[in-house]
Structure formats: C-alpha cells, structure tokens
Length: 73
Image (cartoon, rainbow, N blue to C red; front, side, top):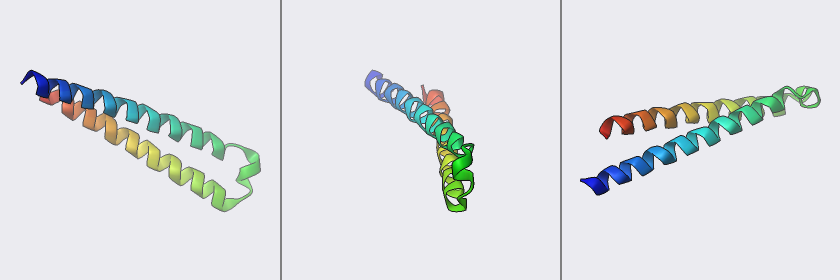
C-alpha cells in the first residue's frame, strides 16, 4: 500500500510540473500576440492564439488531474 501511495504522489508532482510548464508556454505564446510586428500577419496571430489556448486548456487539465489524484491519497 505504501508503494502505491508513493507512485500516486509522484504522479501528482509530475502533473503539477507539466501543468506549470503548459501555463508558462501559454503565457509566453500569448505575449507573442502582443508584438505589433506579428499583428500584421493574420495566420501567425491565429497560430499563436490557438496554441496559447491549447496549452492553457492542457494546464487546467493537469491541475484537475493532480487534484483528483490527491483525493486518492
């Protein structure tokens, strides 16, 4: 039982780290949409906005999964 709890705890840590990484990438890509040079090119703006949104959703997913794994402990 102790070994299973250790595995779940490691999964929680991994989910938090991946969630933070996705959140960082999301904010980094979003700041790319604020640069006026890329605002002129529509497809670059859409790509940056879309990928920023995807990383933000992934970040929320990993934080949600981390909270669900916490309940198992």
